[in-house]
Length: 137
Ligand SMILES: Nc1ncnc2c1ncn2[C@@H]1O[C@H](COP(=O)(O)OP(=O)(O)OP(=O)(O)O)[C@@H](O)[C@H]1O
Ligand SMILES: [Mg+2]
Image 1 (cartoon, protein in one colour):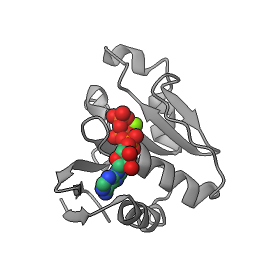
Image 2: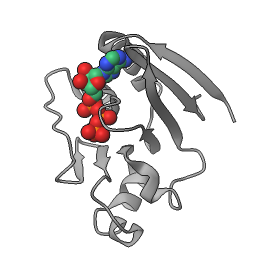
Image 3: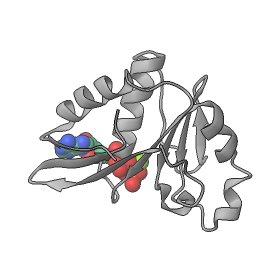
Image 4: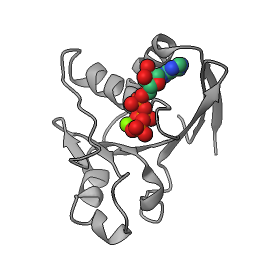
């Protein structure tokens, strides 16, 4: 499995990285965004969506709606999902088979993620972030 490490010292570096990463994504694919509260999962998802669907695309956090769709891109936040059984109702499987699927708090779905899912692990690093990316092409 290919793994890469990136140090992003600020939000601008994080967005620049995400713009480049977005260009490598073609549907269907799954990007699992791991990291504690405020690590930048939504920031990465928003940048990917705006890169692929237009800079003026409004990308709210899906914490309460669980999923937001952008014409073939599905953005999930599974923070409020308590049981993997609930994933069927929110359409995760259908999205993963068809869309570019971006998932915040993906741990509850670990049993159903495809083996070729790209996993991004974000942690604090000084005042910026360190990211480990697995399965990157
Ligand atoms: N590389 C970076 N260096 C420093 N700060 C960053 C970096 N990337 C993002 N941030 C900041 O961290 C915060 C990330 O917020 P964001 O909502 O994206 O986090 P999240 O991981 O989605 O949180 P939640 O778990 O609540 O969904 C933003 O305020 C952003 O400005
Ligand atoms: Mg978020």
